[in-house]
Length: 158
Image 1 (spheres, rainbow, N blue to C red):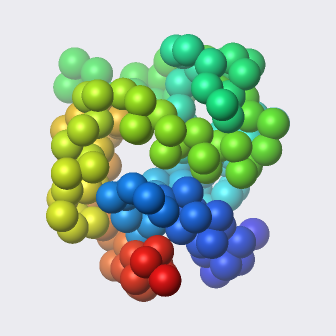
Image 2: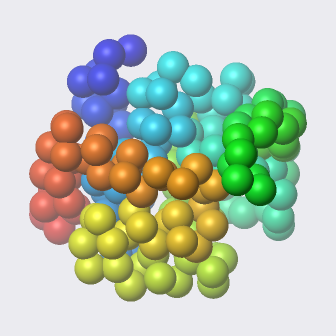
């Protein structure tokens, strides 16, 4: 899948999953792109586009299934490879919807919803502990700016 194919395929489902929230579709699509390498690695057969770990209560979009996969985490000042459980979804659509639900249900992500710009939201995601990679927010902004994903934010309100 090319970068443009990824954008074309997932823009509308991501816009739809952001409606009724203050989430920016540009940030959500950038997260999906970063977490999957533009669709190259959707955590095996798990349909997991956002790298959400396989922990926590079941949701309307996740029934508790998970797969164990190796991942890089930044801990104690260094990257380390660890094996973690990742949520396994029945479909990519469930993964997209569950990402929104996951953020809404975890109060630690409240600053994400208070962000007024995509950049502030990207920073809030990192600050709230969504990812351990120190340049996570800047990587999201690079993706957003390089591919004009800001245009998705205007489509959310149509």
